[in-house]
Length: 236
Image 1 (spheres, rainbow, N blue to C red):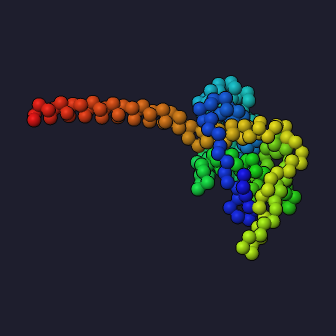
Image 2 (cartoon, rainbow, N blue to C red):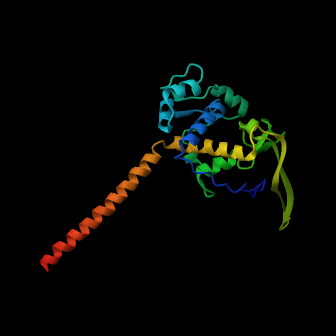
Image 3 (cartoon, rainbow, N blue to C red):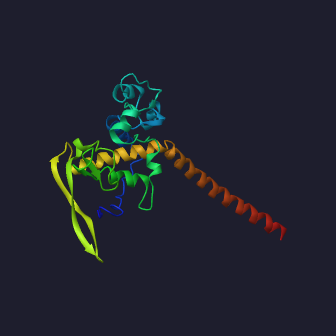
């Protein structure tokens, strides 16, 4: 990973594509509810839609519903928006389509989120105590820090063409997390895949139907070509 503190930030890592893995999506949904839904809503997603990733209504009610939330409700944050704005300076954005809205020249929205959630570091100069390589001076704290542990980013002054920049050199682990680095990367991948699925829950169905439509059109085109050839053969 290459980054500079005062330029474009790190290149985005490629997010794993497990959009058809029901187990990964279920784990991502659990992480979303436990760690994201406290501050961020998904106001265009209903809990009942989680049945599309293989969860039963009983599983949703037992493991994913908070307080007096009903299974037909949308996924709303538990925090008061006014309090959130007072604490963080901004109202936390809705995450329903966050994976679709963050695509850029460096990659897909999933790539952005996957890199973003893995590049938080301790910065005592910030109000939250955290900073991020992908989103410098971000108002959001590191929600998954207990899983990843505390890290510091190591920068080195590099002078080129008379200009000095702070170039990212690597990570310094301050305290270990509840997960190993590999386990954390997998958990973030599951979370990002869930966010990607949530932005378009029917995408797998759309892709499957689209494939069959293309096969049908190819077969129909071949039959039409053969009929056309047979017709003109008699006329000539």
